[in-house]
Amino acid sequence: MMLLEEDVTRLVAEGYSRDFFTVESDGWIFLRNFDGRCVFLSAGECRVYSHRPVGCLLYPLVYSEIENAVVVDDTCRFFEGKISKREIAAVKSVVKRLILERKQRIKNTKNKN
Image (cartoon, rainbow, N blue to C red):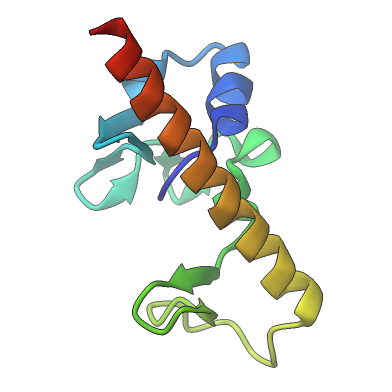
């Protein structure tokens, strides 16, 4: 899952090291996984539930680049019903923020070199 800078800031403020829960690649920041599971998942429970990333709040809604649309993650068996316009707008807003933050990180990296 991709993380916003606000997600990282919030989790660091909770005492977690950025290196512990993030992986960065090509300007994107991802939530670290171990054995295919979120680093914060312990005994089937989220250790940071009240401070979880925005993507977790929106899940199982995800943005599909292939479909260019907000969709329900096909691995989720529990979602029933339709996606509301408000939910679509929320996911699209997060995607835009992720893209803008990535562009800024890449720009900052180039300026350091």
